[in-house]
Length: 120
Image (cartoon, rainbow, N blue to C red; front, side, top):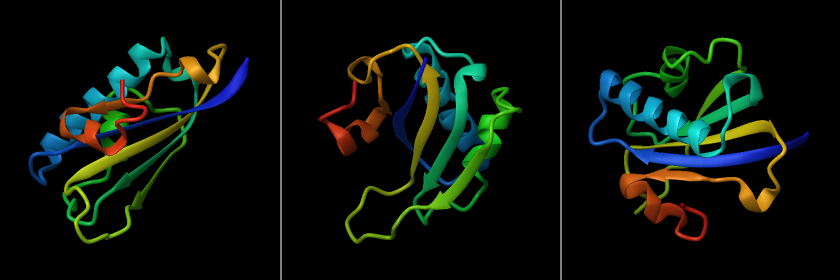
């Protein structure tokens, strides 16, 4: 079993806590499904949010999806002029038998434009 990292992002339509829970929950669900993972395979999860997202922490959405025993942390994304607004990014450290090349990174909706090189 190897330790790998899997990335993803989603752009929110608005800064609203319930909307964040829904969208971040969908991102995490898709990330787990595409990589055939369970919560037990997660070592830790880092979230970043752009400075325009203030309604709640993305980690709250993770807890609501059932990730109760996984260490989570949130940070603010750099405030770069011209950057895509209302984006939550995730970096999850996982235990898996997948080779690096088989790890599926998940960029939902408009966030796919952030990493066209790895978005699947």
